[in-house]
Length: 163
Ligand SMILES: [Fe+2]
Image (cartoon, rainbow, N blue to C red):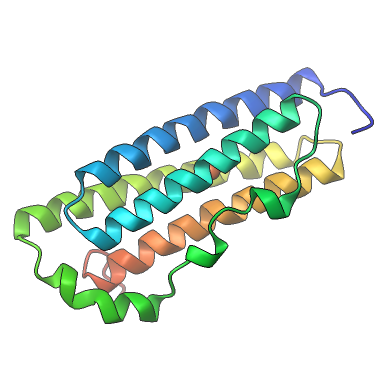
């Protein structure tokens, strides 16, 4: 990195770090709360990726630009919708109260992903270093991927009706 980070750039990085920190805590917490094994796996994978994001932001704040390939935690864990369809029967056996709870956890996690993705979008426009922009863009795409996985789980379990 050729330039020192500006105050504005640092402010955005600190803000993103605090949001990632909340995501890590939330996903770990939700992984321990859910009764559905597939959803537990999703939450655990997301917690790991959010930790990578947190570490990448810390690295940028310390003056280094992380390697995007290394920050990409869970590409191989990404579950396509057809995989969910095959597993659908397992979560169809959920008790109504459990399903309601899982639905709440998913909706809440999805809201946070939408919010965090928006913060990355706002932040990216303020950075001078194109390499940092690229890292932030990559992280943002992983937040969208998290949203997609949650959407797919919800949709295939009748928690996200599409009209
Ligand atoms: Fe993240």
